[in-house]
Image (cartoon, rainbow, N blue to C red):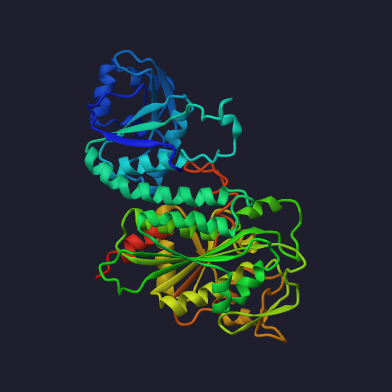
Length: 509
C-alpha cells in the first residue's frame, strides 16, 4: 500500500491526541474553538505567541511543551496567513507543512484543530479536507528497498513516525465526504510515484503491465497487447525502439466506463512508458543515466489518473493507453539511419535513437484514434531535455491543436499548482523534421527541440482535439515541495483529474 498516513475527522469537542497542531490566522486572529483552547491554557497560547514574536504568517510555527490546562504533551501553533485570501493550493501546501512539523516530533498520533475565523474563500469542510490531503501527500515515502527498516528477523520495524492524523473541524461528516475524492487522487499520485521510483531492473515493460493489471479490482478494464498483437497492428515505430532489449514491449489499454451512457465518447490519455532509456546506439553519457528509470513518467501519470477515476467512480468514460518499452543498445537495436514504417503508414528516418519517445507515441496516438474515436487526446511524456532549458522544473510544456482543450488544461493546472506553459505549434517548424528520403526524420536539429518533438507528434494526429504535455522537468528528479519530498512527484494526476471533474463530468448526459 502506498498510503502512509491514516486520516480521520472529528468534532472540536473530541479529545485531542498527544501532539496537537493549532492553526492560527495572521495577526493572531483566532476562531471560537481556538479561543476556547487558549482560555483553558490560561491565555498561554497568545502570551507565548507574543513572546516568540509569532504573527501567524503562513507556514510559520512555534511550540509549547506540556501546556497547563490542555491534555496534550506538545502544542504546535502554526500560522495560516490570511484565510480570506487563501486558495486551495495554499491550504494543501499548509497541510504538507503541518505534517512535517508534527512528524518531526516522532508522535504516532496527532490532532489538528482546523478552526479559523471566517475564511470565506473556502468552506470549513473543504479547508479541513485540503489540509488532510496535503498532509497525506507529504507523508509519502518510498523505502521498500531500505533494509534498515526491518529487524534481524526480516520483520517490518514499528513505525516511529506519524501514523494517524485526526483533523478537528466544524462538520466532520462533510469534511470526510470532501476528503474521499482527494484521497482517491492521492492514491493515484502514490501509484505514479511508486512506478517512477522503482528501479528499472524491477520494473520493465512486462512488469509494468502486470502491476497495472491489478487495477481491475477497482473496476477498470485492462487489456495488455503483446509483441504478436503489436506486430499485427503494425506498430513498427514502437517495436523498433524495443528491438535492442531482451525485455519485450507492451501496450496496455485501461478503460473506465463511468458515464451514464456507455456510448459517450471517451476521453483519452496516453503515456510514454520507456522503462529505461540508455539512448540506444546513440547512447547517453554515463553521468545521470540512472535517472532514466523515470523515462516512463508519462505512463505512470496515466496509470495513476485511471486509478483515481475508478476509485472515485468518476462520471465519465475514459481510456488510458500506455506505450511500454525499453531502449537498449545491442546487436539487434535499431541504428541511426534506419527507416521505419509507423502504424499510420508514414515513414520515419531515425537519425538519433535517443529520440525514441516520439516513436512510441506516434503509434499509440494513431491506435487511440483508430480504435476509440475519442473526444480528445492528451499525451504525457518525459520527451525532451529542451523543455527544461525553456521552462526549468516549475512548469510543464503544453502543446495543443485546440484552444479550448489548452485553456481547460491551463485552468486546471493553475487550480492544482501543477502549472503549464503553452508553447507554439506552427508549420514553419515542419521543415526542420522533413526528411529527404522518408516522410519525416525523428530529430529536427539543435534549435527548438521541444517544439520539433511536438511537431513530429502532430503528424500522427488527425482532426481529434489533442494536447501534448512534456513532463521531463516535473515528473522525475522533481523539486522538493511542501507536499512532496520524493524523487518522483506523481505530477499530472491532480491536474487531469481536476480538468475532468470541472469540465467534463458536469456535461455528461
